[in-house]
Image (cartoon, rainbow, N blue to C red; front, side, top):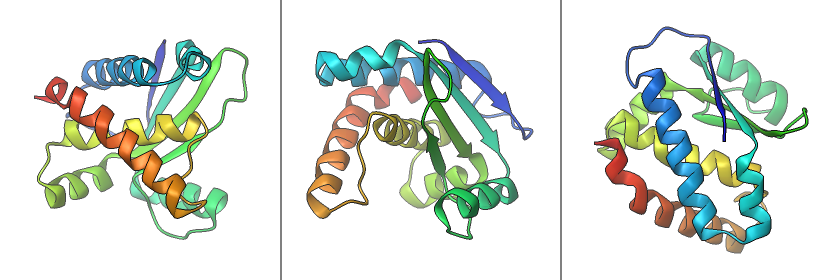
Length: 150
């Protein structure tokens, strides 16, 4: 999987190299737990975009009709050989990391896995069973990869 990182904000942590490394490891970890059909999708290119709270709020309102910033949005691929695009708001992740007692890299990993699962077709907003299944898989993958973020 090739990772393209688009930075629309200034930040120092995590570094671009760390973000790409975490993304590649998350994709590898995820592919080990999925069917061959789903794991084949994880070889395509992934775009990660980092935006401000203001831009995230605009995107969230435009695409989800929720007029507030959120932590991550996932967008299905529009180009051949693309896995899709994940848009993150690092300032939201920083707040959540503090609230959850995690480092910023750990919070990023957790939400990266969440976004990858969405790109694979998982959706926690359909019903309680689908939400439970998605979060159980997300938590399992996160616990196996969390050591990468130290």
